[in-house]
Amino acid sequence: MIQVINRALDLLELIANDPEQPKSLGELADGLGLNHGTCANILKTLVARGYVEQVAAKKGYILGAKAYTLTGNEAYQKDLLEAAREPMEVLTQAVNENCLLAVLKDNQRVVIHRTFAEQDLQVRTADLKPVYDSASGRLLLAMLSPEKLQRFISKYGLPSGDSWPEIQSETQLINALALMCRDELALQTIPNRHVIGLAVPIYKNGIVVSSLSIYLPEYRYMAMDKQGLVQDLRKCAKSINNKLI
Image (cartoon, rainbow, N blue to C red; front, side):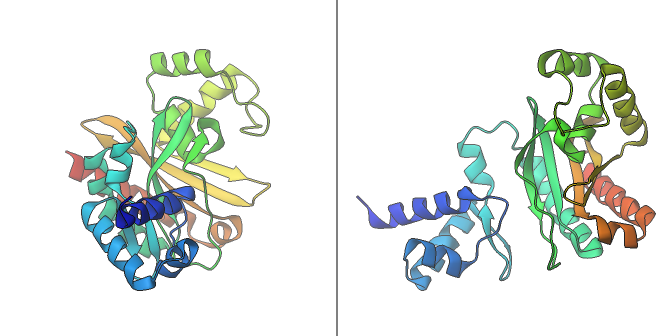
């Protein structure tokens, strides 16, 4: 076996174990028992080839674009990611909250890019999540055509359990989604976690291709300029839209 290839694959697997959490050089090297210099050189190559992404100086490493394309993940769209990367960084710096870009795949909301704030207390959300369980998923569902929405409901049913307790019937679901579609905004409160999620659509050639979201602790949301937060979110989405034209 070729040792350096094994080490590179070990690094990719370790990063992919928890893709929403950037891992530092020290964490990766120590986790695999590697010399820090050796680990840094391998990571440098993986970053240069696009299989790993360095979030920012000292923030750590996450999976890069090439790692997703190898899986055949249809949710991953290179042009969308390239258009969103810089505006999302600007948004995160402006509001100092974690942001994510997500797409709809079957009955899952799939995160394809994240930016991380400097807050000590940050809201984390899984890469894969049932559509009804997140603001980003609900927004993507709301922006479907009536025909596609009806097919989704027929195939996957209504929210169950605690995923969306306010919705008890198909009529309630359709009405709630219609309001989100009209406003181009989804607002979700997760009482048991005291978390707020907001999402707006991203368009390409007049078609919604993803959602842009901010998730933050409820106490910070209640203390901030809520209208200003939504405006910042919409401004970022517009910047991404303009790059996709």
